[in-house]
Amino acid sequence: MLCLGIETSCDETALALVRDGVVVADVMSSQADVHALFGGVVPELASREHYRLIGALCDEVLRRAGVTTADIDVVAVARGPGLLGSLLVGMGFAKGLALATGARLVGVNHLHAHLLAAGIAEELPYPALGLLVSGGHTHIYRMESPRHMPLLGRTLDDAAGEAFDKVAKQLGLAYPGGRTIDELGRKGRVNPTMFPRPYVDNDNLDFSFSGLKTAAGLVVQANPALSEAARAVAASADRSVGSACVDGAAPDSALCDLHDMCASFNHAVADTLRIKLERALVRENGPLPGTPPPAKRKGKKGRAAAREGQQSAMHEIFDPADGCSPSSEHGRALDCPPEADRVPVRALVAAGGVAANSYVREALTDLARRAGLPLLLPTPALCTDNGVMVAHAGWRLASLGLGHDLALEAIPRGRTIPDDFTMFRTV
Ligand code: KG4
Ligand code: ZN
Image 1 (cartoon, protein in one colour):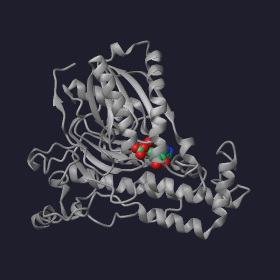
Image 2 (cartoon, rainbow, N blue to C red):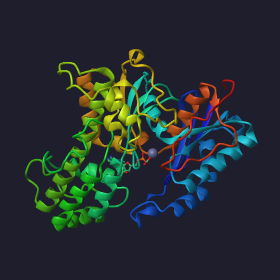
Image 3 (cartoon, rainbow, N blue to C red):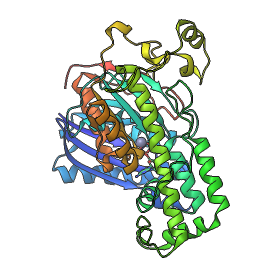
């Protein structure tokens, strides 16, 4: 089965071909330069760029694979969440191609595609606990299958990637700044008390990174030398300007301070993600080997109260140990198996742009080691937006007989992606 994947949900136009799970070719054009001037993605410019490039990129990916449109069995397209105008470009192209060739159309949840990318290099064991950390989302899922991923915890305000990008912007670094902060931090020393671990003193699995972003912003404001050092880094052709501070031998103390601040920020984000993922894991599988059982949680009364609809705080009282969140991304309320049937998760998965972060990878590797579970991480290149993850997810879904008709809707950020697949014969 040859599956073409199309990704246009934000500022990357990316297409890839996957044949029976094996990546055959992929192409991508990043619009980072177009948006860098504005310090963030400008939706109107993003759609125009997708529209300008998508045809030529499609020709190129077919040429690289040595196939024609007639060879395509499945056209998979990221249907959301994302910028609506950008999604519509990919969706219109995908529908036209499916209509013209008779290929199966499959609408792919962009967030699920990120997580499923962890199953490209090695088979993903289900159920797994998935941490999705991207520019717009910080979510924890119980991954039951390529289709069913009940949401356990979610972003309440800024996502981890947004926090990276906003701090980078305050420092005067180019958008998106996550990777630069990661690289700068590698030369510094972590001060574990410089930044808080935001929103962890509670009993839920949700995330809030706006407090950490503000704390970092205050440090930047109070130390103008940090921004000056960052501007010097941004102006240099390669980001390796300045020597590492780790040996205490750096000549420029402002640069060292910048490195140390970035190291501490990376560490705070990674530690926060680790704390919540560890909490989710304990709720799914029980205490980690060699650790005492967790303190008693709230009982039935608390859960009932939560179900009565305390919107964003619903996870605070709801006890994920007895299932998943009250509303999953598929809109299937309380679709969890009964507690007695609940199978322990067999692996940890992390994906999305921030999963490329070296501190995050280290922190989660340590958690997985302590838990005695495998950790599946896409390669850093497959963590950020790409066409391969969409083609791969489309192939997985089509292999289950799933697809969509031409009424497939694009879903902008903030709306639940419906589980509205149609059952077809297996391709
Ligand atoms: O998954 P992604 O490519 O796009 C979305 O779906 O949002 O994630 C983009 C985010 C940006 O915020 C970017 O700064 C961040 O991922 N990012 C990183 C790293 N590489 C990309 N953040 C921290 N460390 C990195 N190495
Ligand atoms: Zn993404």
